[in-house]
Image (cartoon, rainbow, N blue to C red; front, top):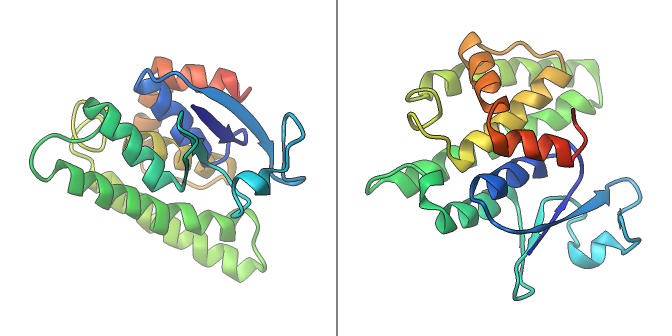
Length: 194
């Protein structure tokens, strides 16, 4: 199995989750500017969407998009999803919220076309981070155990810090808690982010 990633990109969530699930995988670094992998392969031949993450399964199938990859990981390691009859639905609901309401706003903050656009996105992100803080059921999104959605939220909080965006104290504490997890430490090391 291969994870195609770019350091600090949204693929970082998948990197963490793969380590949390204790799955064996190779890491293939992608330069998103040149669209080349570390070996010089044209990344668009792997993913015509031209962005990470990409998870190449052992049988050669390609998965793209954080929601799909993180769900696939949680299916292999059920401890990384909330329990119960509605656990899968709550996981998908939360992954979709992070993807559409938080992740997508960062393009307007980190690469704005104008100051007004950036300011509007910062305000929306502030509200979304406030909301997700109220949704937390414990130390992590769904209680006392980390899920694949926590890896995604942690990645978004890293972006918030990079953008000097204030987040609720509850999310600051969550971020610090996540940072101490061995899977996060390993992903940070592999991507040379610390």
